[in-house]
Figure 1 (spheres, rainbow, N blue to C red):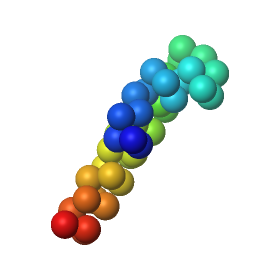
Figure 2 (tube, rainbow, N blue to C red):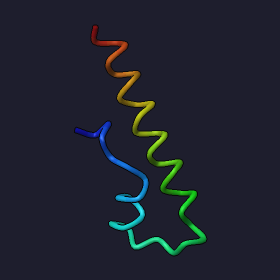
Figure 3 (cartoon, rainbow, N blue to C red):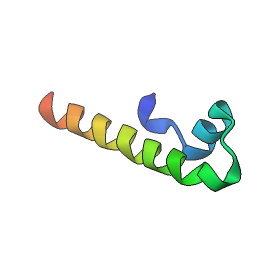
Length: 43
């Protein structure tokens, strides 16, 4: 479920201004990396 989160959803929920959209992209990347790491460790 967490892996399906998109940066646009993060930006909308946090009410980020357009100039801060890059923060939501970083958050999406971090979530995906964490999920991938979890899956790798729990194979």
